Length: 605
Image (tube, rainbow, N blue to C red; front, side, top):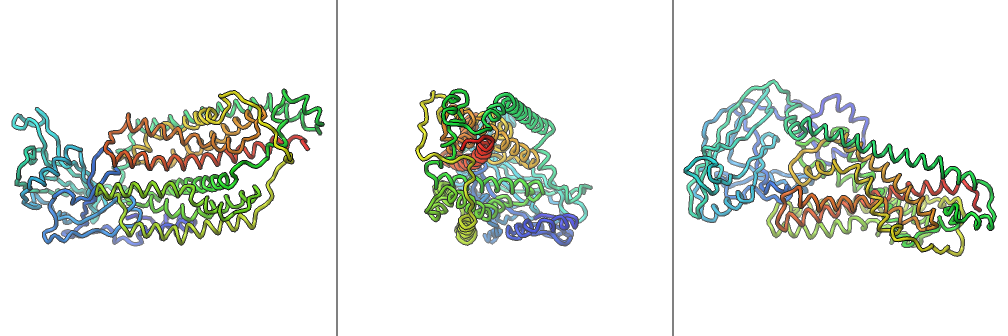
């Protein structure tokens, strides 16, 4: 539940698209003061969400997969979830915990239960894998481990080694007037059930509740979750990363500017007059890029695929910019479950218009004829691999019984958004791009006979150039990657949208400059096939990020098991492919502007 002030609502009116987006996402804007307000003795909503190993936040299971105390009537109620919550694997169910507002309790019995051998085995397996549980009290999250693994000397001499189940929880709730502000959950270490042996165990699950008044306001009740994620030394690291990236970018800009002033500008001024054929031949070794003026604007091979990649990359670029803008405006509160997923789905669907328009118009500029095939290719270039990956991983989740497996309702909602929003907008964008297409702007006429590309040394080939192109852009985001991975695949909260926006902006500039520099060096050796090369060079940072994924998996995380590994490498492959398309489109656009400027500055016809 999100709370907005009157002043915030005034700001919302300036962004009508955001208002429509919030309504579509199902985010309820509080318009009065009645929400989250209680009187003494009122029942405050208490839900159990999920359990899973601490090593990976994506392998999660329903709370009642473990034989905990259920409702007395065995009528477990599930909270209705939105699409984002279902995509996040949430599964909120009611529990027999009763934490009435302002009512203290001391060792209240939840239930007395005899755990069978099968039940003991389930709990012991969960403790062995460091399972945690997530609970929600008045939309405030709480976490606790299922139990602890005991080694010699952990507690006392009586318990040497084994597994102990947490059977008593202490809830410390802070309130301000009629609102819940904070809740802390602690496991009573002196109240554990030994489940080391494979036998039936009688367990009495209990809990205590203590209420304490606080002066903290309701609007600040999530600060402890955010503050614990970013301590002062963490912020210092983020600031240093931005400074380091800025310095690298500044050095690159100075180097390129120096090269332009000392070399390139002289070449341009030397050839700013009409050039005869014999003069071109005589100057061939001195200024090689001038000799390919008749081929530099020759359209690339596989025009439909190239236009589709450009359209898909442009769509992803707009998607990231929109998400960062929403984050900067404060719409992604950490306690609004699923809002980020909802935003990603609807913004991606809406920006299909951009994808269709970009791909369709550019394909027609490249004198393509089958524009419908191009539109279909554009729509499936990124969604196709993503759909196949999702289908496989959803089957894996179903096999493991994980709540990350989407329920039929979520699949229907995704299908409807694709059928009735994304696909029509993609087609509409393609039609607009086709009808409003302008001629391709080429300063030089293309020769009828293609010029032969000279044999180049191995380090000037595509793959070595891609390796070289990705180094500097990757260095810009290297530090931030760790925190992003900890947020996505761990349990850290990442809300520094200002930092990530700056880093993303620096990444785009670095990618553009590196692509321009490598394109110039390619033309200087009379290799005029720069179209695909600039796209591949720009997108090579996505490959570096996937290499970091491999490093993170083995050196920084404790992920194990087929489900965790398959989810991690499967979805990260899709993410890195999206980054490849995004940065590839940036690299090509920058190179195209540079090449047009370069050849428009000389008289080559």
